[in-house]
Image (cartoon, rainbow, N blue to C red):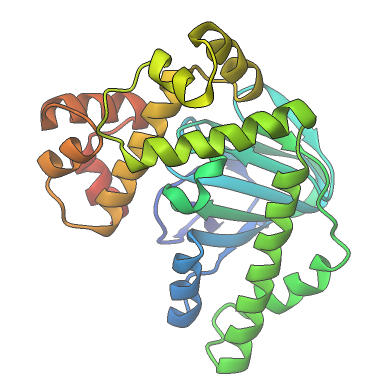
Amino acid sequence: MTKRTSPREPVQEPDFARWIDFHPACRSTVFNRDSALHQYMGKRGVRLAGVDHLAHTFEGGTPKSVTHLIWILFSGRIECDTGRGFRAMKPGDLAICPALRPHWIRLVSREATGLWLHFVPDQRWASLVAMPPGIHSGLSLGHLSGLIEAYFTDPASGDAPAIAAKIHALELILFSVEQVFDRMGGAARQVFRKKVKALESRIQGNLGAEWTVASLGKELNMSPSYLHKATLRHLGIKPMALVTRLRMNHAMSRLLTTQMTLAAIADEVGYASPYAFSAAFKREVGSSPAQFRVAFC
């Protein structure tokens, strides 16, 4: 997130979001400063993590997040919009925003504190693509409250014990988030999500295939019409939109982590030319692949 600790001191981080209206007491601590911790975060698919301390007045966000985002409220009250209108959040709630969707946050109480995690858009957290955006309850803060002290205080500390404590806390936080994912939704949604995960693996293993709704339905042993209804109901997207997102997530990962040419990436994700790929990427992400690579690498 692009954050500001005061109106005159911009924090030099990738422009994931903008603070639009905020009191000078608002601040954000970004945790990517220790090389060892940053390397571990990368292995777990976390591109950036940090804590927002909001006070008095705050509103910020982005119309289209370039990464998967989870925002966990620890104290206070906020409202969050993930594309379905503003909804209230209470401590322990998670705001889930898959990549390429909007997210907006505004402060309701006098103060609030929350943890945010930006995930690399690749197969490590591909389940977020199929996760319905919105506010979800169920995170137990009991054992996490102490971890926040260990992980999110003294961010500049680089000694071995401090880094070990942060890594341990991050792992437990991610484990807790994964448990919430597993519990989310009713039985029908959980069954469908398991099928979608299997389908995602097939798609990711062959992103260059000429996928159609009929071929996707065949993979799940569903008719095209039933698959269309099921994905809209449980995922909030059409079947081919899932294919496009997986392709663009893979493309974003390639742009961020390799020096592959646009032609090579286009071929890998199923586009006949770099021009067709660039046009599709811009429609989905909001910038050209070249602009994305320059901005976030």
